[in-house]
Length: 568
Image 1 (cartoon, rainbow, N blue to C red):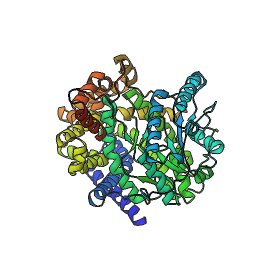
Image 2 (image 1 turned 45 degrees about the vertical axis):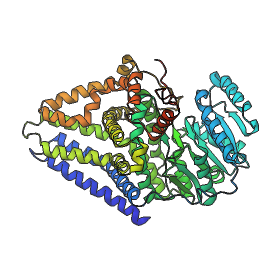
Image 3 (image 1 turned 60 degrees about the horizontal axis):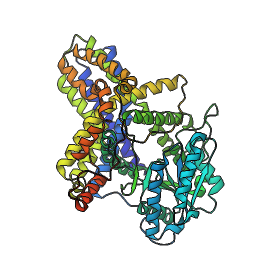
Image 4 (image 1 turned 120 degrees about the vertical axis):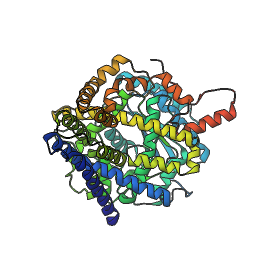
């Protein structure tokens, strides 16, 4: 692993050097000014994350083309299964969405003849106001099962320790006799094949504490999640394959859709309190780090089959989720010196920090560029070097996604799953445009959240809206006026240097000007319907549904199997 990790460091350094050279050729003409120096410093701060994106993308792409991802040992071996708890964590959730996938999973396990090894536990942290209704729905769900004794419901009166506390309470009080638990979130959907693959992987390799799948988005009716998950899927595949190559058994843990060995998790994953006695919000990377430091393996199975989750239905929910994750990941600063962690464990925590800490640097770079455009009257805008820098920078930053798209385009079988080349390219183009707009909006929101954290603000986990909805113009304006105002000011500064400069800034900052209409449009049911009917950004599962529907009911249009948006 040392040589592989050294190669990753080398790629990061070469990427930083190459992009830094391009930036120097952009900034050097006309001499150095304060805005230019700020641009250079901000760019240097983003280099580690940009280089890591390029390294994981290149390595993952090469492996997928040449060799394919390696399978985990024993994933398909038959034989007796360890006693396994299906542990589903819920808090103030709509149980009408949570329970049907669990019913489907239990029935699939019955059909596989493996159900005797599995017991379902619904672990609730729901508050008092909704608890009675939740208990009634679970009781009805339990009564309708062929074996009600295999379904258990437990509610904690207080959300102590958040989700990590919920899981540990279950392990302490209810998990005796279970060797493995499969962790599921309220929006998780797993097939029996996927669950059995993970459990058998742990059975075959006694050194592993966690085995998990890639988790892909569910087919979505709303425009926002379908565009978001189309790109996330492509990037996640190459990223995970590349990362697995150099991290090995010291990989990340994403907290759900995973098989976990009970004994080591219970022994090592009691999380410390933060300064001031606060509980850790984002638990999963810490758990992976302490397990690896205790000599246990944590592995990602880089396949997409049978492990799914719902993505936020609209931009407001997406930003709230991002800010929750940001608050949790920033807590890792306090844990970097946690005794006993191995270097890779500390890097996992640092990588989680970099995921969000780079956002203010991108914004500082943009603001400094606007200031340079407005104040530099000596040198003309270096259009060719600036375009080369922008193309190379965005290419490195989005390398996992772009190379993931390329890998699909080079495979006739994978293209067929996406409905053919034309549909796939159309979806990729729509997603890339969407992501460029979204990332500018998100960077401002993250920067604002980091500033609030710096001055003592606290964020807590709250219940999430998972249902499709429209977003009113008034709501979008209240949420996104800072992005819009900043966009107006930035482009006013760029246009003082000429329209060429403003056009150059569009890929980096265009999303600021369009933040409010982007929010409304991507939640608009009619726009989502138009994308569905045109099969734009359709994931393979949606294509399969469409083909099945056409074969079984050729005269009935639409995608009845997809969730339909609720009225605003």
